[in-house]
Image (tube, rainbow over all chains, first blue to last red; front, top):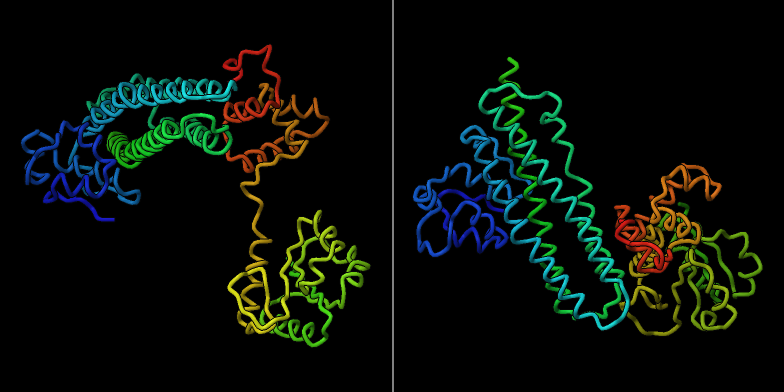
Length: 231
Length: 193
């Protein structure tokens, strides 16, 4: 897959990968920019273009690693971006999934409780995800701020413990897909079910790409800071 | 795995011709039989995973059909003695060229050696383990209850996850509940998750 550069336009980005729509939105970039290049748009919106490209390319391409760009923007920018992503999950994605799941249950013509159990499983997943988000916001992000500002920080929770974290939360979303696609009796409205699944797939993809930004951008930057401070 | 092919055909020319083609192209063990009864007598000694190439009139006999029914490791390719050619992989025609025959046999072997992934029927023992996992028991407790080793419990759990495609304990619990493996009339399901 191609790598996006500053001469590209928003249309190139979205036409290539429409999953980038919410990503550019997190930067405050709207549609309707006519033929402006990404570079021009970033200038207008006061966005670091290297940072913008590092994020969209990491998001767009699993094998992309922004080695050169890493030094040209602050980890604090990433934290700000990640927080916006969290807000997108909690304020938009999760409520949307819940609404669809609720509609799906209402459409069920049988008297089985299968979908109710699925909903309970979903809520279990949600509570773990929210806990994970809370951990990041309350522990990881403040740690990043302290590291960047060269302040001392509690060695008990460091980047190395953070590196290993996300995993079980990921397997639950996969289990949810599996249960619905393979095992639930299809006594519901199919179109609602498909819409729920498509939303779930989109959400899963976004979460995975979000995790990759943490692993490929944030953590290498923090390790670099740590190395510099130890010298 | 040592590949085994058994050929059931009345014609010695066909038997030996097929055997010759297979020997030249596939590393496998070939045995020849004239009829199903000859084959059946020794069948117990032939292992439980093999491919049979069988003349179509014998294939359709009720004795062959009932023989094959409960043998999951056995794959069948039928041999049709007529001058037609086809694209199907489960049939060999006498006028197929050697390459086609080799290809069909190879495809059959590939399908046989595929692990039964995605096969979602759990064994009775696996269901026993799944029930206890769903009820929240730890591996050690499950081992004690079922009088098996913890190691065996872990291996059952691995197989269950592989068969179902479900990894998390809560996911497995949901599977157990929707399949009525556990009685939920007196439990609050969300407590189990």
